[in-house]
Length: 188
Image (cartoon, rainbow, N blue to C red; front, side, top):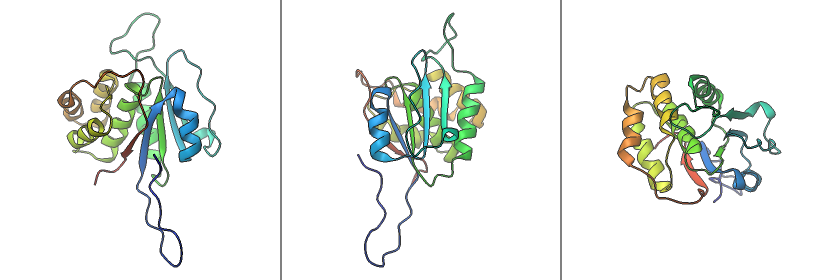
């Protein structure tokens, strides 16, 4: 999958590039970062080592969140908390949306889809249900981490709309790792 293309050749004016979020797994992030050339990256991992910041991404534009993919606190694990989701929201607010963001977790199924949906909700207030439906349409495997979604809903002041939107799309299809998903940051 390639990044939306600007018009090329002659005197044509460059078309505006739609701000894009890409979601993938840890195993695929280096390959996709090289091909897509995002300027920002979000890594959500538990015990795994964070990948090196890809060439072309400033270290300050690589958000690293150490969280496990759990819905309830458990001894020995880092449950997603307010501080993690606040960092994600602040990152999303600072993003100029002029270049793509690549978001990954270990499998590209739960934490990364929750983070991408949070960023979509941030930039499309009141359209949480549309954002969740688009996520399901493009990622049959998506199973957004419900703890992350509940925290994002509260911090974004969505009044339950984000939680309801995720409940409304139901569970994802079982896969052993996600595939590259392209999502618009701003819904049409």
